[in-house]
Amino acid sequence: MQDITAGNMKQYFREKALGFEEVWGAITMGIGIKDEFPDEMPLHHQIHLPEGEMIPHASSGSVFVSMSKRGDTERAKEGKRTLNISTHALPEYWFSLHEKYDAAKQEVENFIVNLLEQKLPGFSRNNIEVLHTATPVSWQNWVYRKKGRVGGIPQSMARSLLNWIPHETPFKGLYLVGDTTYPGQGIPGVTLSGINVYSRVIKNH
Image 1 (cartoon, helix red, strand yellow):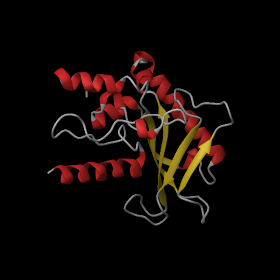
Image 2: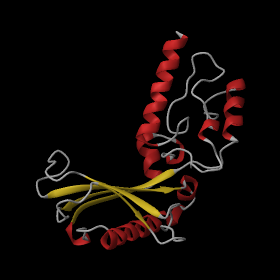
Image 3: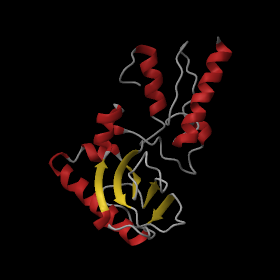
Image 4: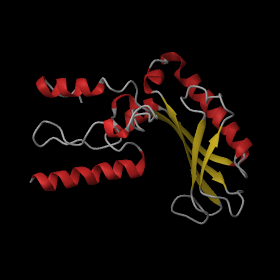
């Protein structure tokens, strides 16, 4: 916000930003794959690496996996499934790679595919028909958020959600919504931030 405002408004957002050292980006993968998964397999998973280990070029020791429901032919053809994989990454790192970017992207892709082969029952790289990997660089191109910053502010026990940037600002008619405002990231958090702004707009008008 401080990059697209001026005067007192710019100063307000500059001061607010000082309270947060980093913002998440994401490494995501979309996979179309032949369905050889167990019949009663859950649709959502979080796969953890051994304690202390990290995914290369990422800022996480785990990946989230969501898969389409068997028979959902709107997302995949009969006998196929789609998988959406994501993990946290620091955007500034990916924008600093330059000529090393392609190699880093390939390395993290290979690492995650190997991890899925080891930990996700029924997953085999030989069954992959479509695979697309995205980084914060991709997300900036897709959604125009500065340096592909998607995923909100990293949460920790040391930072109370109550200290996050509020929806109302000192400037008449300007409200904030999204994953960097209270109550934070994820579909529930962002949805609630939208409801909160709606309530304030109605109350103030």
